[in-house]
Image 1 (cartoon, helix red, strand yellow):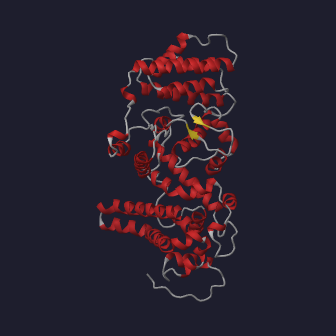
Image 2 (cartoon, rainbow, N blue to C red; image 1 turned 120 degrees about the vertical axis):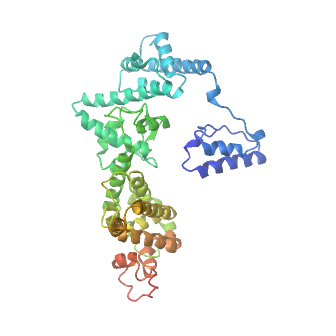
Length: 450
């Protein structure tokens, strides 16, 4: 069984899975049950598979009456469990309330399951939680509006619950947007402790803000496991300004990406250094470095920042406080830590991804400069002068990785020896980082300037 095929990170991965499944059918007796949203790559992928090998079942074609009957059975079952757990009276909460809750679900199982998780949450009184969900402010609204409303009420309830403990509601709201806003846009999941380090927040604060959100987030008791969304509809709701217009909980997606970019760069600037795993010998192979050493020297929050800081910059690029200019945040980071960053990528086996990251940064610079192409020549020249050093460094970085990827991948510290020595004499990278080459390198073969 493959659930939520549409959640694959890459469309290419989705197509590959579908192709392999269709080929496996020819070799072995195999039945596979796949669930997914009908995203375009998935629909096109199934179109390439002969009809005889697959059967489509579209949930939207099932009558509402059947779905509501199934939801009703689900609610009766779940609420009976909640009744027993809380030792409530026999028959709680009664058929009228269950049927009203079923009506509010409007054929959405995600509404019913979210409601049950909220009512079951030990942080709240089950009767109070149920009453909150059954207030009739929005009776008669669409299914999407009902789902938005349950998310809104759960989130506002969690904020007001924190405020009852004497905390400032504005502060709680700010922390909520910072923590939950980050969770819904992360490119990879992180455990609570790593998330707190990435956001540069006390772990206690993150734990406290997530404590009342178990009905919409999977917050494992085992702190080694990552926090996850229980359903992608929560991300859709929280990042849509029209659907989530309540100021205390609304998340500006670009601002959230911008803040994660800033946090990532700040974390890397504090953590990265030459030979961070204390390998000492330039010929030490990555394959000979114990994974425990890598995880200890490069914890998950640092690994995350290494892989995704540019992508957060890209998606938060409309924020005017960060400009891709000479001596700006990005340029200063590269001047200080470019080789350290590449060393870290090598240690975690992500040098190839580093090529894509640098190309993304190069594209951002190209787009940024081309925006000025419609302006007069003086304005364009001024823009070019504003970041020509950064442009040159990013270009040299791309060439540096492509030329030396094979050796950097297998021996990280070769970045500071053979890679630097064999770089063009006038390369901005060689000129900037030559002082990081080992002292025993006295004379070098002069590579052509370009």
